[in-house]
Length: 298
Image 1 (cartoon, helix red, strand yellow):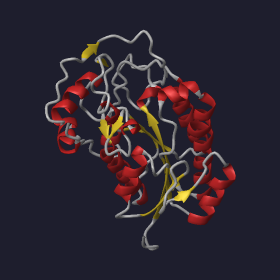
Image 2 (image 1 turned 120 degrees about the horizontal axis):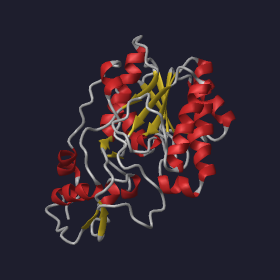
Image 3 (image 1 turned 30 degrees about the vertical axis):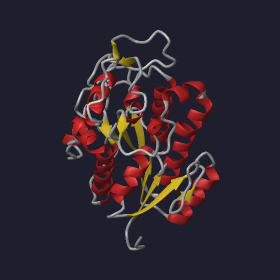
Image 4 (image 1 turned 180 degrees about the horizontal axis):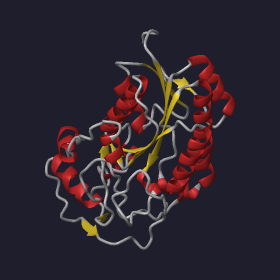
């Protein structure tokens, strides 16, 4: 990439959202992506749980903006190993935020709708978090830690993400494809699936507006506007796969008794601040349209 371009760093660049963010930014910026467990050519291997490595990365690459996509974003995994989730979602994120503040780089931390309990939607950016599971708790703690380390931090909360994956389990939406023959499917929890490419474009606009002199700081929400349960997602995906028979699927309209992690019923995020104050239009690809173009055929 041309060294004359402004350098933007993206941690977790091999992840579901990280890849989309790198793609969205690359035409306008010199994007330095980092990864660790899935390190590959063209990216910088960085263990963000090591503070000295973070400082070395900043000294070497001197980014003017940093987007923290690196995270433990699997609720069940976070519940089983809270220490590991805390190390990535809280401690490491705060170190990156602090180093960004020290170097004068703009910093954005990706958070989640799971910081809310889902009882009083839609949630504005100043609504009081009340997470129901450790994943949501760790992301809320991460938000507070980042803002304490860097008062100029941006927190971008996003809902359930889907998009182009490297393996089905990478997204809680895409993973429905290989298990669409399951007997019971959640038709209770309200979700607002948001495409990674749309979320990445929002991040592109946030970075660009900051670099053009607009004050971009504090908490923002970016959320798709379609309300869809996982059962309804299966119906849409099955149709896009060529009319797969899903008559065997039973919509589950209550919380499973054996659920390992408690999830919010409806954590709908309001887009009011990002649209009205940041001037970023929330215009997401329709869920069914994306799957019509990208679903594997049965």
